[in-house]
Amino acid sequence: MEVSTIISEFDEALGNLRQEGLSVLERANKGIGLCRKTLGLLRNEVVAKGFPNEISEIHFFKEIKPIPMQHLVYYTEVHKCELKLPRLGLKSQLKFLQIERKRLNAFFGSHLEFHRYLLEGRTGRDTHYFTREKGMVHPIREGYSYRYDNEFETSHDMLLATFKGLERYGNYLKEMEHRLTALGTGVTRTPMDGAPAFLFTLPDTAAVELAYALREARAINHGDFEIKAFVEYFGKVFGFEVKEPYMLLHQIANRKKERAKYLRRLLDAFLGFLDGRDA
Image 1 (tube, helix red, strand yellow):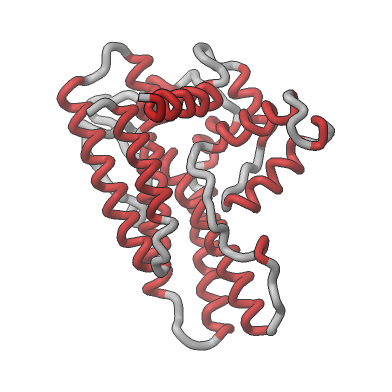
Image 2 (cartoon, rainbow, N blue to C red):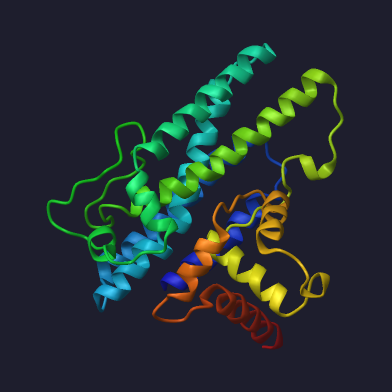
């Protein structure tokens, strides 16, 4: 099975999972299974076929594998949270969430250099970070090791996916805190403030591509809006957060190959759908 097909089927299954009306814990369990299955299929492709060149290997471990991997991180953390969250007492519950946020901040703080490397859109160390090397050292400390496999892992692809997964988990914690506080105070919340019914599942750079495309096409407010404000609103609606949209634009603009790759992916997916519909 081709890698593009595996990812496409994963995206579809993930979307279906969110519409099944499951509890949070049930969805997390199913999500973990789906992610592991997808990663297994991707591993089979990599082991069987390898890569034609270093550029392809870097692309896979930097852009493709983190798609299911970040969701595995997210669903694993949500699963643990749901099991550990105190059942009674608002004060105890909020204290638990505060401890979880501190844990995430400590993790990000311990990997500042690599996080900055990603945010600044640098590529100079991609060969080291995103190709498989003998004797490579994994930077993730104990407690965040979701999967290790020397044939299917570079030194930093796991860390990249963990960043993305924990950022999503951080948003989940924030939403849970709002919900618990609202229940404790009797404050009624609007649908916008509730858990999002739909989640944006492409990388943050895809959201930035889309935001700029909508502005330049004058599709929203006749193009009269500020990117950061729009991305913040878009993220609130679809359950994610982009902290540095302008930094990501710099990264997009400096891509050596196709710069609007996620917009191209949307177009190709839509044309493929139309072709299938006409067949």
